[in-house]
Image (cartoon, rainbow over all chains, first blue to last red; front, side, top):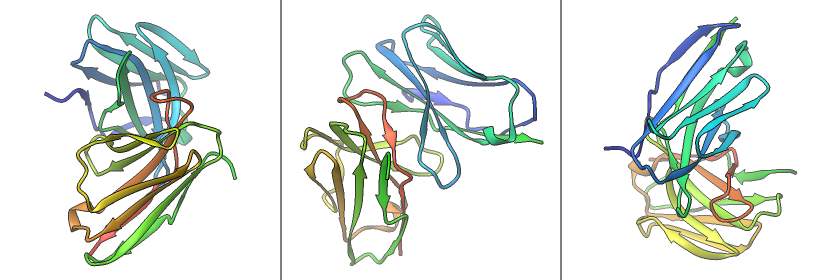
Length: 111
Length: 112
């Protein structure tokens, strides 16, 4: 079983839609959770960083962690064509020595 | 220059060549990393350096050889690579070990 599972998509939505991106994981020791955005021909860029369970909001982006279900989500409100990218989830245990990444979900927002 | 800079952006090399990838970070971070990104696979950690000392070698073949002369610079020396080594090689840095990573734009490597 993979440590982190992420649906690769591709996901295609109209401009203005609410987007939900998700990852599940198997290791209950994961405590820190991140979402990265990667544009074509660029490196991943940190979008959101959360600790343990709960919600965190930053502008149009909301990160949600449900540790009881081992499930994390990234919501994008009022999606824009500039949000078209691949979104990677990542996580690490409290005393961990490496990050575990999902395979990424490819998102296209159509004008 | 700000952030994490990687050179070259693209590299094509034959299986008998020797080449090096370079990474420089301008963030004042203490940890630096090499990752391999292949299509449809999660990022694979290759090497970790903390205050110039290597702390992780994730069972990487010896044809990849890292070098970290100081906290701002990281190299990946390549020799006798295989076609399956073709991938995007990403350098990252973090303020302290295992705090959120800041990535460069990668070197797209093609081995022919």
